[in-house]
Length: 176
Picture 1 (cartoon, rainbow, N blue to C red):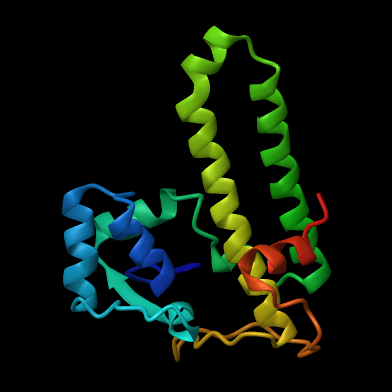
Picture 2 (picture 1 turned 60 degrees about the vertical axis):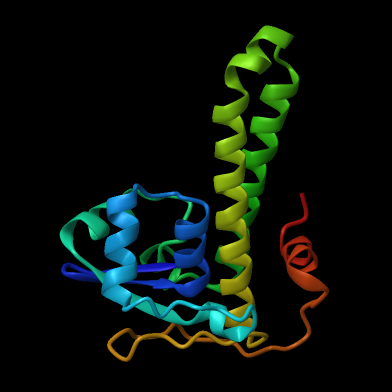
């Protein structure tokens, strides 16, 4: 998840790691993210992956704003859990529509469009994973440590969501 303000931004460690390891940004932007964070984005795979790192610089903020695969806090902060689940369902529907579109293509069209459609599906899945984490945060199943100057959303703190790994959590939220 990203939280973008005028001169600074915050991203969760898990997203910073994906940016670096999956080379989702050019080398200059990746270097700026690493430098601004002081290189402190080691993640042990537990709850620390939800910690927010402060990043900055005009180029980094402009780039973050253009990355639709990273869930934007400003999009979801005022949503109810039900609205967030509906958003997740719409993302799942978009992904399924892309898959249907691909499956209906002939062999030449598939070859030509594979990379583009694959990237779109991966981006939607990434956003769905982040949204699933956010919904589980709202339910009180996991915790995010929001930066001090950011007002966290209201949580309903109902326990009981299935916790059978990330796939199970996503499936428990989005039926399609």
